[in-house]
Length: 291
Image (cartoon, rainbow, N blue to C red; front, side, top):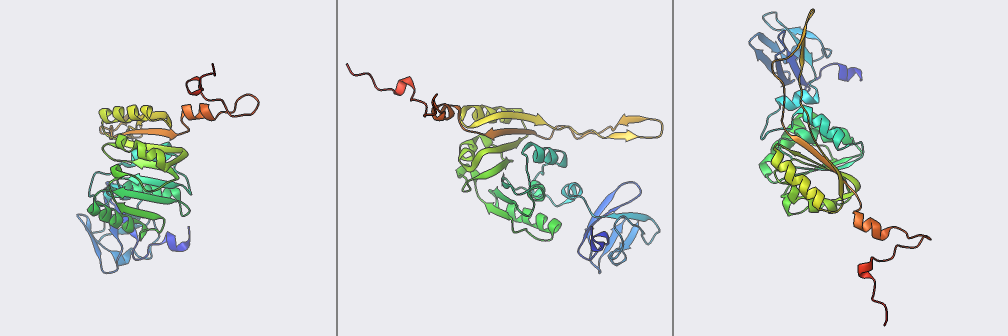
């Protein structure tokens, strides 16, 4: 990290944390003042300070100053719709194997929480294409993305459209769907995903998951379907005891993945016969012998 990134500059997002762990997030501007029940802290006194410093309010209470992590930002950013929580976001990135340079298709955009995580994972050499059927949602997500990154990156394509009507893109490496009826997209995804690509769907209910997996099993070209959920429980650690916290982030949704592969029937037809030649047609396709 450069010296400039160690110290706060005007325009930085900062999370202020009090002695009880309460957090306040704000973007630094010289004319602004942070107001809390523990007193006021002028932004100008934060600019130029090193990240991790503890700075006093006008009442003498110290606030810890840090740049927010992506997870902290996602939980505090303005929401236009329910977000995918950080505990699921991390699992999605691994389950879908999002890698630097990948072309990733996402629908729907929502508030842009998962979009931000996908952008970080694909890096500057990758691309994220995200659809939402509500223009206002796309605009809201763009504001959230710009607020965290300082602008909308060039490798992000945001579209207002209904993916149930089809997908324009082809040769995609990964598809991540957070839509109510992803089974209606499976046929389109078959054409849009490259062989070896991964389709991932995030769904809240077991009935939705069941219908999706039945469709994946019925459409040639998908294998290795897997469904999981992530439960997060933190622990309270003291000098002489440990116990789980009274609250936990339990069920939020199911993650279902499947791999796009060559259909079995097609593979059998294209397999070379002994001797290196193409396999003969099936018996049902062979012409009847001459009398």
